[in-house]
Image (cartoon, rainbow, N blue to C red; front, side):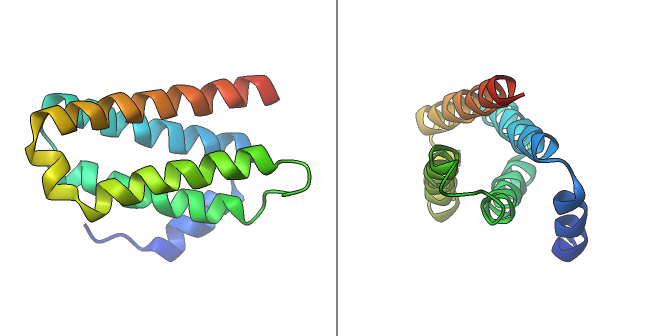
Length: 120
């Protein structure tokens, strides 16, 4: 997929932090849907990478003194996404691992949305 990451970054960073969090949660829900169906592999793979970028861009603006828990949570999610990206074939071609991916993606999405609801 030909994505201009600089343009995406500019638009993403102009958004309110709540919208950024919602965008990340939406990507995770999309990954969950694709992983459950076993379709859209290239789109799911792209969403993993895009989500990694979202996290990289978000953590820069987090105040570590007042919001260390959110930063740590995003770092944990980044690790999950990195594990998927680095072993993509293993995860995608194995139905059980793909199901685990779907479950993890949905749990993370729910967690982020719940966090947003609590902080709003």
